[in-house]
Image 1 (spheres, rainbow, N blue to C red):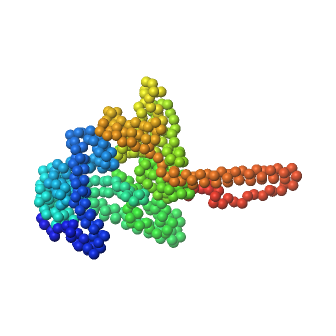
Image 2: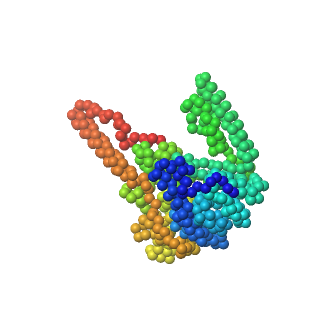
Image 3: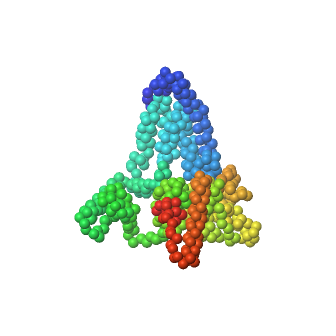
Length: 496
């Protein structure tokens, strides 16, 4: 397969219309030279090294190999596992194409695209694709042309794709967090096109019906009728604005607040719990520092205040004003108290093993870092927050089996993890990043609060003394009252 003429170090500046700009033309030539030489060789060497850590027959041990790889790659567990599998696939099933990467003919990014394209193929099918791609005149192809050819080739080779996926293979509902940390999350429903189109039409028809009823209700209210209920106006937006809710907002309400019919199958009615950590100044409207939902999702201050307004209770978590470290509470029993478990979950609700992202509230437990000695508790690790962390079930079993071994530093600020005897890494104890930035503001507001409180007490004493003096003199004169407090009053209500 051949495309246009090859891009070379000599003509790259001309092809990019930069031949008259000597500085930028030379920069382009250096990039081209590096991509075909040093960068390509480093990519291939690392892929071969990472592939050595993959063991298809390792079973559970494969998880520890991925943990070890994650330490070197500075990657989360899921990413490290994917890179191990991907490297093994590239080295084992696409050796000819990988050799083209080493020679500079196949750009590393193109090889990444090729790996993604052949993931669902069998090993034999990947070898067929590999032989075909290695025979192309890659240096003459454009990125778009290469991608199109690969997609066509994979579709041709993939017998399952040629038949089309079954409905069972395509039905899925997945959760995706926003990449811009604006406090939103996306629920994606995937399935056969006819079923999804039918769902969309039914949802749209229901939204139109609700919107029509809202229009009738608003018209009755505008005509002076009282006691009219606006359907599905859960937050009072239509009542405030006098306008129907947008169709998109109604669809959202129908999906998130509508009844889910399980046709008689019982559903455990446990309440949904969300952990939201909000800086107190943000809660009071004195700062817009973000909150954290479930330990990993940044939430804008305004949204955090709205959520906090609905909370049935609050738990105070103290931090060091300089370092942001979470301050502990103590216990001498083996089993952590409910308050301790809450403390650990609020500080870091994710599994403590480096790279693991599993939430322990649903899939794990709070465990001792230094083992508790049941026979002689005074000799073992104490049941205190600085000696507790959360582990998912899988890594709790791994710790029990000694595949992974954590060791907390003497000052309690770091944990050293030995992973399967292959490598070790040291992790700093989680701390609150906002505290350090807001420490001055906390101090300033507190000093202001104390001064105003003292001034209020002095005024109260002065009034009492004036009343006593007036009573003693028999005048009965009113000593007067203070002016109403301003915005700086210590009892000023928070903005929610």
